[in-house]
Length: 138
Image: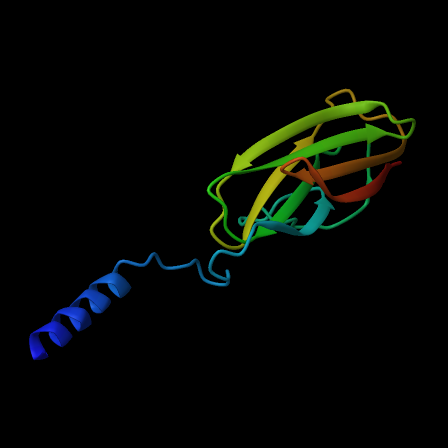
């Protein structure tokens, strides 16, 4: 009886030692979701926006930083940048494998300058809309 109990305890300890640790700040098994979308002229080291703004000059590089949280073996973030009449400026996507909080950046640049007007960037996660940010080039 004592041997059986010892074997059960050892197996339980070995099984507990084999579990994969979760990333700090992420709930174990929490699905990935978009938690923040920011616009600006430059990026910080963590791919966050260094100077948040929604007003840009024609010559600016326009960055969007998308923060996600949760875990997934694979997910796809996508952006669709449009000009005031719905004209598509650029579309892009990034495959990610998040294990907690993470940031992904997208940007647009036009060497000859963006036309003045109202723009929008729509972000989706795995094909599902996750948010939109409006901005203006003056």
